[in-house]
Amino acid sequence: MQRREFLQTSAAIAAAASLNVSVAQAESDFPKGKAEHCVFLWLGGGMAQIDTLDPKTRGDAMANPKKAGSYYASIDTAVPGVQVCEHLKQTAKLMERATIVRTVNHRVVDEHAFATNLVHTGRMVSGNVTYPSIGSIVAHERGAANPQVPAYMLIGYPNVSRGPGFLGTKAGYVYLTDTNAGPAGFTSPEFVTAERKADRLKLLEPLQGRTAKDSVVADYETAQREALRLSGPEFMRNFKLEEEPADLRNQYGGEFGQRCLLARRLVQAGVRFIEVSHNLNFINGTGWDTHNEGQLQQHGLIQELDTALSALISDLEAKQLLDKTLIVVGTEFGRPAEFDGRGGRGHQGTAFSLLLAGGGLKHQGAYGVTDELAKKIVENPVSIPDFHATVHATLGINPGKDLMDGSRPVPLTDGGQPIAKLFG
Picture 1: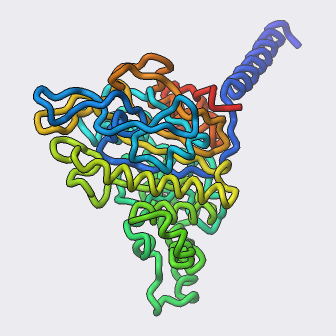
Picture 2 (picture 1 turned 45 degrees about the vertical axis):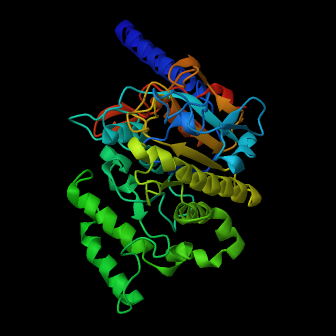
């Protein structure tokens, strides 16, 4: 070997060894959880942390001048020193199985859609790339636990913030808005026999392997195959909630609770990520968007959340699925302690609460500390990318990994670091 060749070869070997070491170090830098599923409960509109999961001294919305503070009284939980709103009585008893992350923060407060997109994708909207949602990333990285079901399901209305972005159709969701009917269009008409389905699949065969990988036609082919695969009785049987005991269905409560019960059934069926939307019914007239008079009936929403969330935690635990299933309670931003002119609250991103339960995490009731008005972070701030990294790590996904947008690497999270204290 010539001297020049020797030096070039040695440099290449050294570089490869260095790369392998750096990759190994990157993977070892992140904890690796053992959860297999995620149920993401979405409270669209902006849950007021000071009235739910991070209560403070009582305020007075009716006084003149109005006094800033919590709208409701606080109660103790199963974790000493951790309190929640008085309308979360059932969840309070289960807080040893959960952690309220009280110091989540971002700077997007003026527009619900942008904040919703940020919490779902972990990134701001970009003009030249559509980022995938957390559900799509989990679907892309882990796939379904059972090949007979989709990896990602949305119980609520579809939205680009929940979508696969540059990951494409394979990482997309199947959605439904009616818990009894199941996904629209997945039940074949009686005249479409098994033979006719087989014929339809044959029609797609000429496309296989002949379409550009990232083309619209390829996405269409994937979507059609997935729809045909799932349009049978095996998948649709998961939506028969009447198979559940009446007492259990009653324990879950109303429509939101029935969605959570369905999510538990989908976990058992092998769906990897299920988002359940709670911005429905608008019990108080405005949902979680508690401006003006919507604040006055906010307790109805909180009580419905308490009923459904506590039932989901207890049901998963009874079926020995809680350690395998991460429950996430998400919302786009929080609410300030100050009341507006008609007794409601505005928007706040400087500090708000999201919740994690189950998933095999080392729970501690609450993580992070805010000031006396739940407005400023005192200890342990958690960015949206940090929160995403925690969810991914819990599901055994390396949050430091790169995804590929064509030939361009995109970090799975925007520099997020998992909350180390939650991992044993």
